[in-house]
Image 1 (tube, one colour):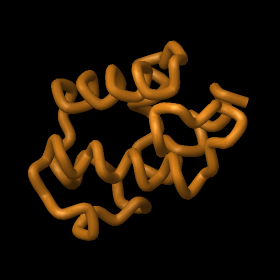
Image 2: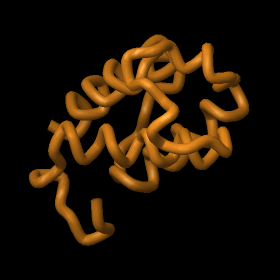
Image 3: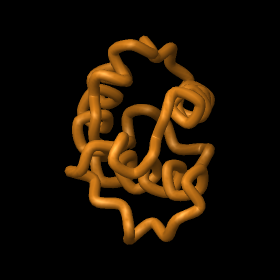
Length: 88
């Protein structure tokens, strides 16, 4: 997703891809090594990583994310769905 994209044009696949890229960046892993249906904790996403990722999400989407709610969404797919609800 480009920085100029409006919230109305965010697609599930685009947001999912962006999330995968951010998570891969923080974990220093290839994007294709992260399964969006696997619990992020299995990849070593701890509270420090989670806060960093949530901060990136808030900056990118220009929304306030409930940290506890986001952490309950344990996979990229469920987190993507939650974020799409926030920007709807």
